[in-house]
Length: 490
Length: 96
Image (cartoon, rainbow over all chains, first blue to last red; front, side, top):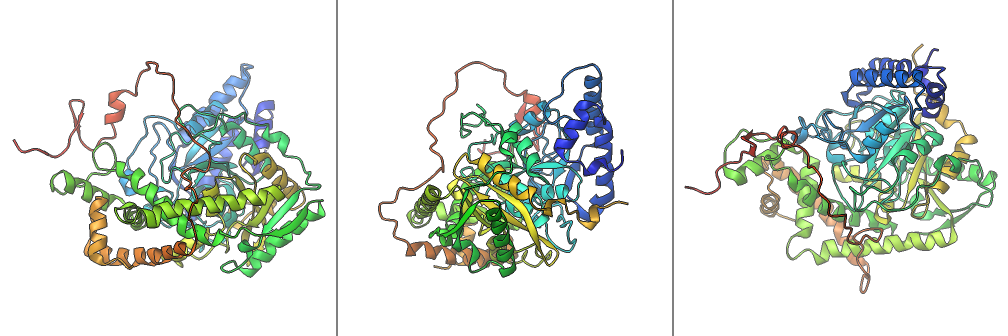
């Protein structure tokens, strides 16, 4: 069967389970696609082709013995390189962890393996997930499959680009301020940030622990549901994971939005948001209304304060979480002398990139004596106001619709010298992490040949509603079937 | 409210980060770009507003206190930049 790499995860599971295609042929097809496009895209930091082939052959052997296969049977998956994989290098795209090989699997990775997925490699990202373009990787940038001169977004840019270029049907990323949804939008794929607490973070290298979540990338909403089903649920190893039943997310994928109340927050279409992006997203909302949804403008009045509050809270948490990189237990150690303090200062100075250093220092400053009340405490209070805005909106609306990113993919190098301009790429996504609610980005059109994402938000644990709305939209649009030229092999 | 390079140097020391002089100049500029924006939060009246540390209520979570094997020592030390005889090696801290 030709072009196996164009199959979705759901199609692969059906084909492999029924025996119409072998898992080995599937994985070989994707590895061929990786060989063909990777020189241009550079989505991966580490590839594990031998392990993937071996794993696929084991699945085929199990099937031929009549043993049942798991819900992701034979599906090739890419994992963002800040999620621990046993015996496979996990770098966080940082020099400080360039040689780190985790002695254990993250819970999500363990669950993927148990579901019979096939791990093919680790994807590039901004260092420690800090950035919006994947240019902060210590190992070089990833390129946007739709325009190789543009960034894929970030921080999970490698995962988004790999799915867009059909190197894998699905991937995992992490989202602290938009790091799944923004690259999903910029690469024209689906990306979901689950509710805080829905998915275990055990084995996710911590950046800002009150905001981080792991979530899936895919081309179809159905595949996002499939992956979420496997990774969601309580984990005793993550005390912030919520002990709540996991619904049947495949059942949620039905094209029914009749009577769905959509709020359209005006703050997300104002200053700083590209006019054409705003219009493209508005057309997607109109499309949902034609299917029976009812849209109305609303207001989230504290939106304008989210960026400032976020860039106090996230760096404050990062400054604490990244204190563990001291050149002693693991990671880079300086070759220069200087006693135990000098060892730490130089190991960290050599190991961390500029953006990571900046956030550690901002966090350290915000938490330092005399500034705590003015910065950290006030930012937490503003967080309460932002959360309340959403609480009030969800009393009137089932979902909210906004642009995912205020702009389409931007040229490599355009913002990398201006950290503040880079941070403005997250204005539509980071309030969602502050509130802890779930959100999905779905491809909804193109501006100047670059993909645009529709962001749909729901109240906590409202993933089913997100999937239903996004599924209905995809059933009635064809943006997700478009393939970038670089991924097409005759 | 702008930070001087000396103040940034002090913060870097608190965070155990070595910065070159060139890095210090760039970081001071970039940190000040962001810190200048923080003033905007002073516009809001937050009197009596409870701070949010987690978006969902998280209480103390306790697990059953049962024995279980830890990760093997060799697996942990395999990632150490320097290890010997089952220990991490660090520079001398106390003079003999």
